[in-house]
Length: 605
Ligand SMILES: Cc1cc2nc3c(=O)[nH]c(=O)nc-3n(C[C@H](O)[C@H](O)[C@H](O)COP(=O)(O)OP(=O)(O)OC[C@H]3O[C@@H](n4cnc5c(N)ncnc54)[C@H](O)[C@@H]3O)c2cc1C
Ligand SMILES: C[S@@+](CC[C@H](N)C(=O)[O-])C[C@H]1O[C@@H](n2cnc3c(N)ncnc32)[C@H](O)[C@@H]1O
Image (tube, rainbow, N blue to C red; front, side):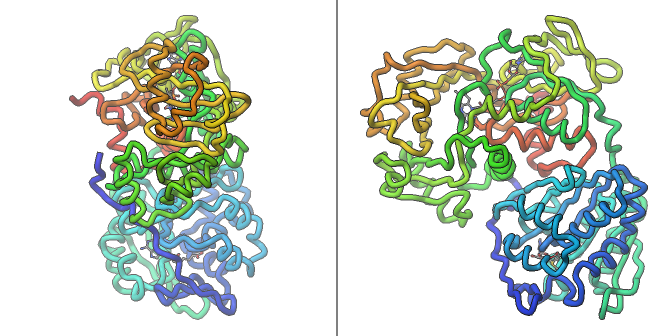
């Protein structure tokens, strides 16, 4: 599906100079923060200007939004204030940055402020890759969740939705960066504010004042920091836009299914401190797709900007960090071959789109051979940050000590006045919130909640497990083509994966032949006899539009399913987004993606 709102443009270089301890943008000919004392400036303008200390002590949850993340010094000031006050306030910090800096430059810029050294180091350890995407990371044991949009704020803001309690406007001088302070941007700031939201900025430029007034803010000039005479603070007039209650909507949750979708939901519910129970049919169900011994995590880039492509970059950013942190990578990086041959043109076009090299890089046949140790007869794309994982091991880490009842088959769901009754073969449970993550098994449960499933499609997929043999097992990197071939491990080597419109989990020679036929011809010739193959067949669920289902399908009933052939890359990110949304926090995915993934689309024909 083509994306109606394009903004997956590549990021501009940071273009900075650092001289005499002063960080300056050459593109905007302006400094990042006061040469006198940037941290004191952040405190005076942004923290004091918005009444942050009071807000931290009177709120259980705050949404702080910022235009212009830069080195993150304002975030550092917020963290220091939160630590000083020892509050339990949960913060969602949302910021926008068009030209992300390197960790090296951030470290340099923060060096004069030893007080925030610990926070800065923690942030830099999680610093997102330079990909056009929304990235997120946690600070202070998860009490501060940072959502960092890499891209131009003026393009992204109209496509997101949240309820800011506090705004920091920090984007170079309006004269030198007018687009960032335009009336349109100020009106988005107004749209995204809760009633009585507080805002601060160091500029008193008349264009900014008039933009903010038109956007519904009441303005007040205050004494500026250091040599600056004035600064601006503002309060949003009431317009009936109240932030949804943070915790009321989501106290207890039943998750149905413990594959990568359910395990990812459990991971994020645990992080949010929300009670939950996982029910899984275990041996009473089909073999779960997430039970395969190996699977590929990689971006799915498209020539024309698509929602699925954009989703995969943000999702890869989160998944890659997770598997790195937990040491869950079986094979690092993935080569996508120019096979079938139509991909040659596609890869060439992608190479002209300026993607960062750690996301994708076009390579020729010689480099393919050098990187994977065997000639494949074609060039391709190198995904340095792709990887192979062992899905059951990843699910175990995600589930950790979440409460799981295994071998419980959920048969039906019944809506209650408040919440849902979950009818199982072993008894029943009730919960205010239920999240369906049952993979192919979700189809019957969606139907039992009186939602049509005509647009859902189950496909059967078999992987072939070949004995280790000379030739093919010399491959040192995973190869992706119409199918995939993994490097040999522990005496066997996996190739995949068949795709049949059926719900059978039989293991067949036809599917082995299919998997072999997907392989480049030059490799097929080196494969062992099919009679020596074993296999594993499981089921995928997909919507006919090939996009996942993620969101509420009925009050209190949500779905994360239909992950198709990309669940291992996308599940963790989508689960984070869904958990945020059902607990009244800002979504991670933008409005076009929310609409495209909305399970309610199953109701419309
Ligand atoms: C052969 C094959 C190869 C693949 N390779 C890749 C790959 O390389 N990379 C990639 O990203 N993706 C790959 N995929 C897709 C990926 O595996 C799936 O998208 C993902 O695993 C789906 O996860 P899930 O949690 O939605 O479903 P599942 O993993 O199927 O888990 C669903 C769980 O729900 C439980 N359940 C079902 N019904 C009920 C019920 N009524 N009551 C209680 N519990 C229930 C099941 O027991 C199961 O544990 C592949 C899929 C297949 C089939
Ligand atoms: C004044 S600096 C931010 C200073 C910040 N306090 C810090 O700690 O560095 C402004 C930031 O806004 C970013 N920026 C400028 N124009 C932008 C735009 N259109 N969209 C998003 N970010 C932008 C710049 O790249 C820069 O990092």
